[in-house]
Image (cartoon, rainbow, N blue to C red; front, side, top):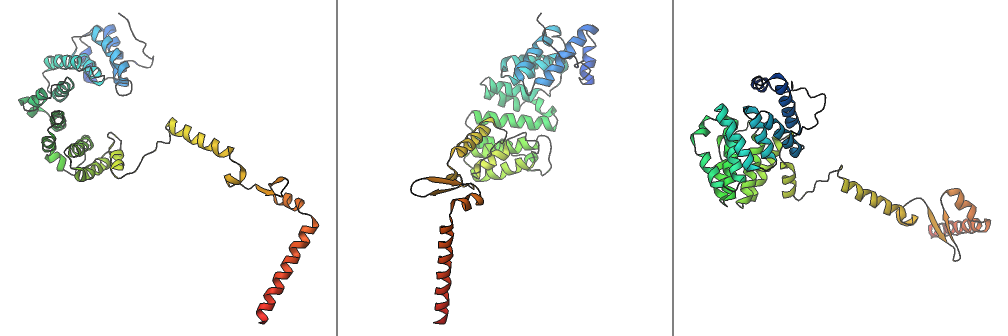
Length: 302
């Protein structure tokens, strides 16, 4: 069996206590090996799901009869859009444990497989009543998504209308629920109402789980610029380089150009200007000032 490299700092003790307890059914050496692979799945799932999937397959080959392993493999498959594999693993984990908390994600796999009707059927089954509040909200989100898949946009809006949506309390799922409701309103051609809910979603989403702030800005006609975006940085550098290539008088710099009819002279400092003008120029300027003063006195006398 091909193994994957695992950093030395990964020991397996990072897993939750209940998962470690499950792994005690395995020989210690095998349990440690499986545990370390599961840690890698957890580390990589959000940022590098394809790599997480590879580690999950190793753990699955080592311990396919452990529910936590089947569940981890299910989430790795789900995150890489391998919905058929994910559904198989989630069903196996549920059979082993009897738990219903995977019901919403199983229904979402049905959506991923192009079977929204099946997801809606699952939303109406008895297992939903056994879910905790967070699970029920997830099930509502999946059901609304299934309605949208079917083009039933008004029904999706109604599906999301609930006490949890109306509540002013903020929970881990609040931002996602409000965001989904705003998107459903957009799909139902109720954009004016959607703006309010995107704003509410942004207020309840300090960690940026959704992109509610960006959607709100889009509606308001604003544009976000990522200062760390390489393309933005390259554009700024190109603009600066182009400015440097412009003549001094176009750049608005301190250099001054003077055309005497024969030669162009660039003066960078005041002392350079003084050197260019000769004594006759200075006398002409003084004469001009005298004439101006005399004209002002004559005007005052009149």
